Image (cartoon, rainbow, N blue to C red):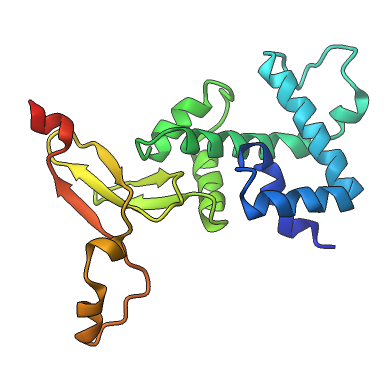
Length: 198
């Protein structure tokens, strides 16, 4: 049984949709692996401690000794899960610096480099999207549904257009020219609805 295969999905379990296939696979693995289940339960208890504003590195005397043994294991997954939740919770397609500022509210000692490293892991695992809109830095998108982006030239806002690129572009005409489209992506630029009213 390969625990490594399910490790990231188990870390992100509270933030995954119940209907997500990875959610079901992670639950199934936890039911079969006592070691991963113990670590997961420890991480959730640590979540509760941090949410209560207690210092996990200087816990009260009543804090379970068993949980302390998992603190080093749990802190990184907790940080990664928090980063994942920040990206999923917003539709502004935030850059790493914005995410870093939000993370520092809970983890003041977290560096920008650490946030970038976790974003890369989440991107490579297919949990978030990395977008490049030609601004000189990358943005991140928690919406994995097939969609396009609209960038406003006045307010610089980035909006999701919930229409797949293949529906907005006649791919058959492109293919007739001899091109084979593997990954249709579409980026629209103009004036958004809010700016258009002014």
